[in-house]
Amino acid sequence: MHESWKPFLKSEFSKPYFVELSKFLHEEYEKKTIFPPKQYVFRAFSTDLSDVKVVILGQDPYHTPGVADGLAFSISAKNNYMPPSLINIYKEIDADLGKHANSNGSLVPWQKQGVLMLNNVLTVEAHKAGSHRGKGWEEFTEAVIKYLNAEKENLVFILWGRDARNKKKLIDTKKHLVLESAHPSPLSAHNGFFGSKPFSKANKYLEEHGKEGILW
Image (cartoon, rainbow, N blue to C red; front, side, top):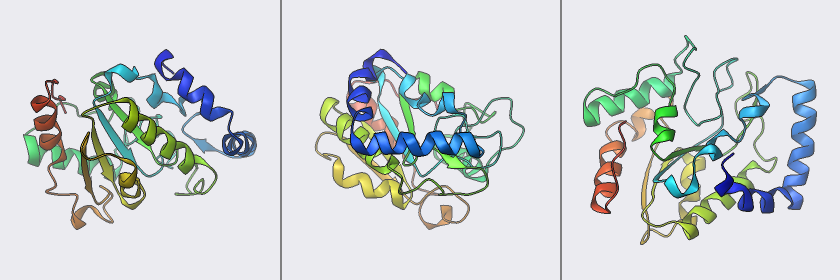
């Protein structure tokens, strides 16, 4: 994780809810197959806090083996499997902006431009979507959103899916732009994700506030 996040993370890690979450995760990683790999759980926080311009909030990591890489919606560049949610994200970029800049599934280029890709729940058991809900991660991500809301100005928060949209109440919409829609999953993408144009809207807002847009 980047040095800029350490004061915040150190504070959260010492709280009772996170101590309990840590115990739970230790046992899960010891006994079961959990994603992403342990060393990637906090990968989103390798982005320098001062560089963060856009926050994408999803649900929980991909539960298919070898896919989740610690950044919400991203996959390892070496992976031959393209998750349906990511396929739909690329479809929306194409419809919104024209051909997307990236095609291998790794969203690290977004991270390098200041996009913080965070899931509402940061871990999951193999083949069991939502299996780590209600264990403490939701409290952690709520704290992250509150912190970003307070510490930064003119961020773009992109909230995909019900769990992410529930965090809208934590964001000062006079200070930041909130873009929300259905999740890009095939189960819900046609209920408002397609056609929502979050990528052009985000770039327009960033440019209006003197920031460089994202090369999606």
